[in-house]
Image (cartoon, rainbow, N blue to C red; front, side, top):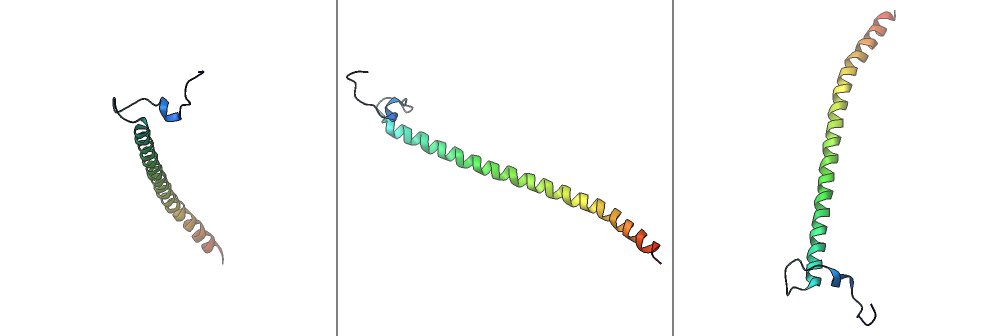
Length: 83
């Protein structure tokens, strides 16, 4: 490596768009694409967590409904046994 000029990190990037294109422009495009993919991933995570929260809510409502009638029956039995 003696005698060679110092190269920046973008000098080693392959040219995606073909000959005659600037590597720096290509790296900017790659960074922009990466940013968009990260944003889409965050949106996907938000949707997954929302669906999970909705599922937990539905299960909780069903469980409370099922247990609620049993608890009500127990309280009525207790109330009727008290003179």
